[in-house]
Length: 250
Image (cartoon, rainbow, N blue to C red; front, side, top):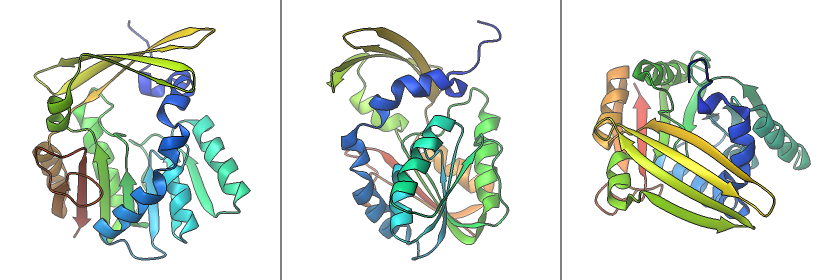
């Protein structure tokens, strides 16, 4: 429909999917994930870290607990408010910024940037993805490192199901998926059903292979770029559960 805002700019989408995206079980995984990614990327203690698309701050908060200087950036104010409340309860020092990832740039300000949980490739124009990577590169100090984690083309192809469902805390989540544009784009419809209401939500994003993503980062100027199958540094092979890329700025 002409004039309709993209799904990723719709606050209603993020409000409705909050319990699906951030259940307690997933929040509890942050400690181990941060422990592993710090070791994998070699991020030094006390470093300045940008959590790009930080959501409700599950990784930002864990990094702040460990003494890192953390800036969390997200476009969804409700998520930032939740992160701020959590930080306040623990008296954590955490900078939170409401901004679009295509626009946020803070020249040579960070030792590390993390972009996790498939928070990349939302935009129909691939030049927007390029703009995000350019912003990240500019925001890193020389020698800084980028860590990205996403559902890749190869992993999705291995586990693909056109229809799926799950139930959590009394909420039934149905998902329908369609692969488009020669495996470069995936469209999904989520149907959320509780005892009182039903909500239908559409989302879509670009699919990157490990080769495509590492090429994008190298073309931006990153030096060493390595792909792994998870935060534990396992090989990116047929057993990979996610694509984790670590890229170093020259």
